[in-house]
Length: 133
Ligand code: COA
Image (tube, rainbow, N blue to C red; front, side):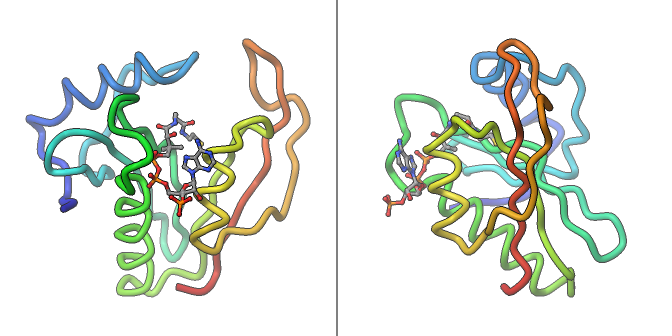
């Protein structure tokens, strides 16, 4: 089950962000977040007019490969449809095969490359976008 984040979710979201990413965000707008109700993972979706931007998705390591990220992305796509968005897009490290496979499974396609977008380590970003929900 997934739900919109509450302000009380902020500490565990920030902690999962910190243990997951090299350059974790230190501040978040919890209202953009969709979370697993057992606090095993999150995704954030910023909506600007009719455009959706996924910031990050993360699942606690011990709970991966159980469909949790899939449930979160399904909810993103449900909201994209009901909100009448034109597309949902994101950036992902080009070596991040699990994430690329996840997004591909849910209909995202690579439509751009941003050279040396990431640091430590330096790496290209793939831009992946879905337009039909
Ligand atoms: N290798 C290959 N494909 C993988 C994978 C892996 N290790 N992990 C997930 N996938 C793909 C598969 O297509 C899978 O579908 P399938 O089970 O039918 O094969 C699909 O994703 C859904 O898997 P799910 O179990 O819902 O994913 P998850 O809950 O394990 O979470 C991540 C996937 C990417 C969110 C998780 O590995 C994670 O938190 N990684 C670190 C953070 C990160 O890299 N986030 C992306 C930033 S852009």
